[in-house]
Length: 189
Image (cartoon, rainbow, N blue to C red; front, top):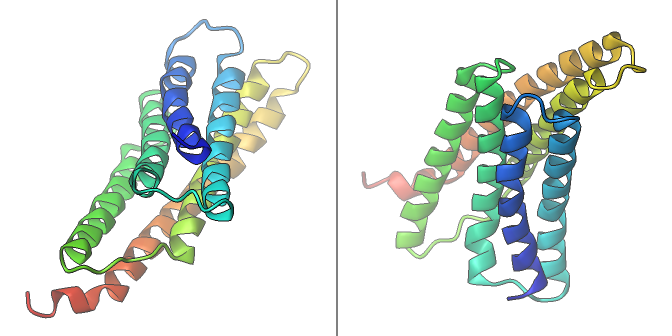
């Protein structure tokens, strides 16, 4: 197994730890630890693709698992946020709807021998989601330190929540672009 694929698997392995740190009360510095795990997992997302392309290590496993690992990371974290009352279930529903829609379009395209490449909107969606989630971790981690005034956590969470709404808009736009760009697939439907 090559390095990019190992990084993808590592991203998936971070997920249970992130969930543990979010959901179990009483873990000292749980939000900080969860945020560090999420940040490291996000960095593996950036690195695996770059390494695979630069070293010509692109594999079918990587093409399949990289986007799946991204979705698993973001969705599991957001579901934990819903359970903790940090964001509404509608945020998760909108993002899941987009992911199922785009995956379905890609499956139809694959059956016809067409590859739909990633576009800039999909990357914007992923980056805004990861920035928003990272900010929420930072805001909650700020509350874990007595020397940081609570207003710092309040501001970080407020800005990150706004960024999460931006991520939802980017998610909707990226889904709409994928569907629009693939409209020829459904001419005979």
